[in-house]
Length: 98
Image 1 (cartoon, rainbow, N blue to C red):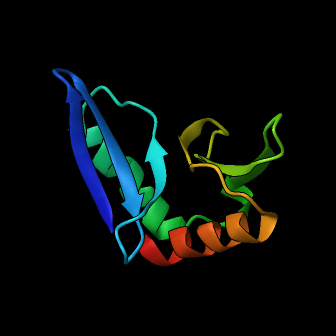
Image 2 (cartoon, rainbow, N blue to C red):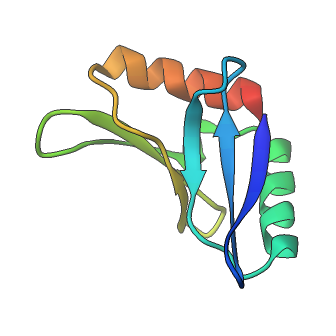
C-alpha cells in the first residue's frame, strides 16, 4: 500500500506500507504531488527491480536499503533491520506492496 502525505506547505512524500501497516519505505521530500504520483507510477511499472535497490549496513551493523530512481538518485529509505534476512524480507514485502 502506498500513501502520499503532505509534510509541509510545499512538500510531499510517500510511504510504502506492508499489509500489516508497517512502514517499509519512506521517500525523500518532493516539491509537488504530481512528481510524487509520477515517481510512484514508475516504481509500480519497474516493481522496484533489484537494480534500483541499494543494500547498506550502518556503523552499528544494522541493515537498511535505499530505493533509487532510473538516474541513480535515492528516492526513499527503509528503516533499520537487525539482520540481513530481515532486510531482504523487507525488500520482498516492498516489491509486493507496489
